[in-house]
Length: 402
Image (cartoon, rainbow, N blue to C red):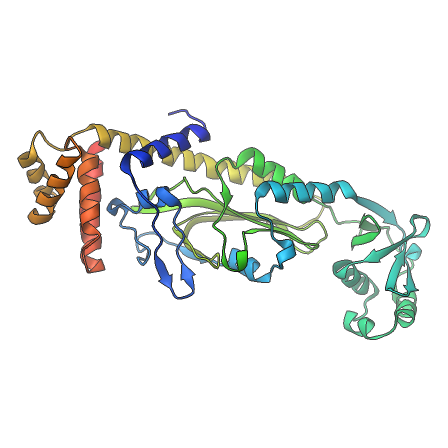
């Protein structure tokens, strides 16, 4: 089709309006509600893909991804952002306010003060420490932080004075205002969160945060130690081996050495309110440590997102083309011809007659109108096994539109 992401989204919305499909939410268990991407997920809940909220994927090797769920329960309210732009603005401000300082180890002088402990950086003055940088100072001195936390500021100062190294290579300190954010050796190479988010904004067109989860968590997090992003394309539903999937990815980084930098891309079938990603396939992860070559992670992440987008667009183009063809082509010249075609596909005659009657009310007996009518009728079939078998038979009708 040769369209950009906005054009494809417009095509999909046109199809949604034409079919009058509405959102569907299915229960998976008592703690978990399936997310369906509005009309797009409902469209892909057609029987041609045999997909329902309670149905497991059997023909596709799939996995359950819990990375986003772990982040959801680990993050405080002050680390949650409600839009990708808000997160980007925050990370950009942090980068603008941060400064790398290089100091010889002997110039690091802890100072006791009424409010606790400061770190004197020689001519640069004294700085406060946050939880992370204090822990790094303890590791640099090879002392137990719990022990230091139990003593007075004066005693803590003496402990560091006797244990901090006084020689060796320069240390890299990241400061913001009057606070030390991180302390590293010379080999550490920093990547700023805003650098990764610039790539996301440039390449991940159509992707947005997953539905808001439990506790109001959004999948967009950034704290003093690291950043985590969970994005999906709610209009990207497509068929993989006869099942309905949408694309998504996790992105993470730490400016202060808390974790590696990386991305995990995947195609999924459902996301729970606790942000567990169910039935994921084509799962690919790329990660790097913050060493000399870490900047190559930027091109790796850009490539991963572009590859995911390219596969989405190719699959979605095929989907739009198939549905448009199904909306134009008739299944038969008259009702009897359509009933014969449905009988050949193994559709029960009573259901076939009801479907033809429903489709006739909407005009021509197109492939699309007949499939849509059959889909509505299978929704009242009681047993999931019977419904799945019918779904597969009905889905085969769309092959006539290709």
